[in-house]
Length: 322
Image (tube, rainbow, N blue to C red; front, side, top):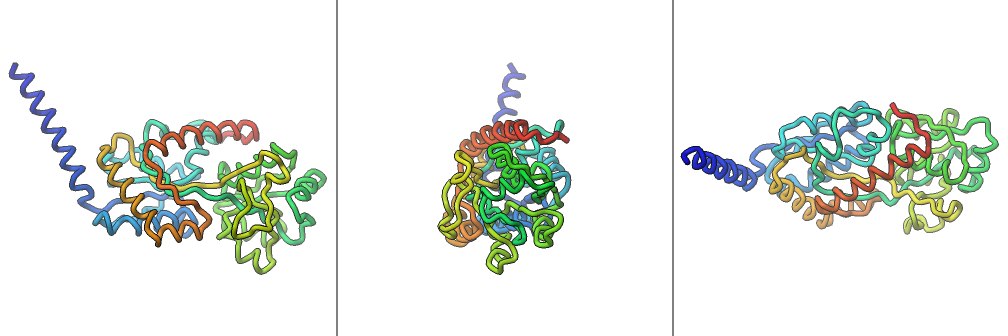
């Protein structure tokens, strides 16, 4: 009888203690791990979100850039962190793609992480070519790639969403674009500007807009399902290759598994508040993203579907596992 009373008392203590901890969360600075180098688009997105929610949370959010191994190093650090809400992951599509590209990961995406919120989804990539390339449209690019000895496309690395967008084009059109991975999108764009190493890049508009405006690069299409309002004269790939659609990247927040539900709910609520505020919303839209701020349940479902989709595409495109 005494043992049962002690057990019950301990259970109540643990339960109320956890609730109390969640009530005062956060009581110290939060570490937001970004598994990419400082200065890139993923890092900029994370910093914009952190800035938008830290004032309301009442605590500083410290960005921890843990780059390396296509984002695996940073993700592993969060998977093994204490599930208390003070170490979080801010990442994007490559996080899921890695599950199809790598034979073995030091974590299980669905078991070791809790989705907090998908903050925003990209409205696709713009396809740009070097102006010396005799391709003024997607159709001409496809046909030219079939006859060329070699036509390379640059990406931020193996398993990147840009690689998947290009390989989807290869699969659906019979194009013969060859993958040339770089350590980041910026080096890939620099290589394209040179015109020797690669001839094509799939990129967010913000990354190449200036080069397109000055004529250093030529835009031939967008991967979205509909024409962009900002560039209504630029056709979608789907207008040439029926059924083709690639929405591009997304970014969102994850917590380690077993993080208290109250903590996850608090973080999600702050993200919703921030996304609905003009400053962050304008930043996202200007960057070519659609604000989402999905619920943890919605984000979990998205992860499940996206994970299966990329694994299937990786197999179809015969992207070798690492």
